[in-house]
Length: 102
Image 1 (cartoon, helix red, strand yellow):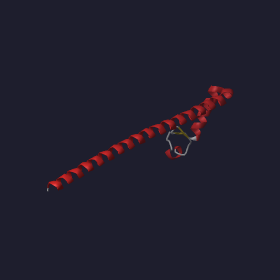
Image 2 (spheres, one colour):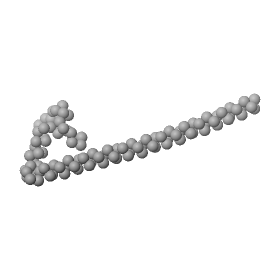
Image 3 (cartoon, one colour):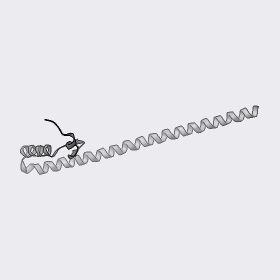
Image 4 (cartoon, helix red, strand yellow):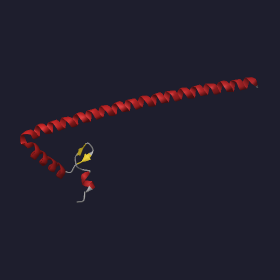
């Protein structure tokens, strides 16, 4: 049973998992048999709501991590600039003292 990778890349994506139309059909049939026609619509709504919440939480987490990283990079950059300014002013003071002593 070989998989055509180019076809799988075209199929719908569910949390990064590519599914072919045949796989979706098999999953749907198994769900219909397991849950029955009365419970299937409610179960699909719950699953869709769950994926929606997961996507929202994932987005919030990604945004928060990005914000924290950005702040840390900014603080690090500021500290490096302060260090460079201090180093430069110390070098200028040393140069001035050297000129005065000559």
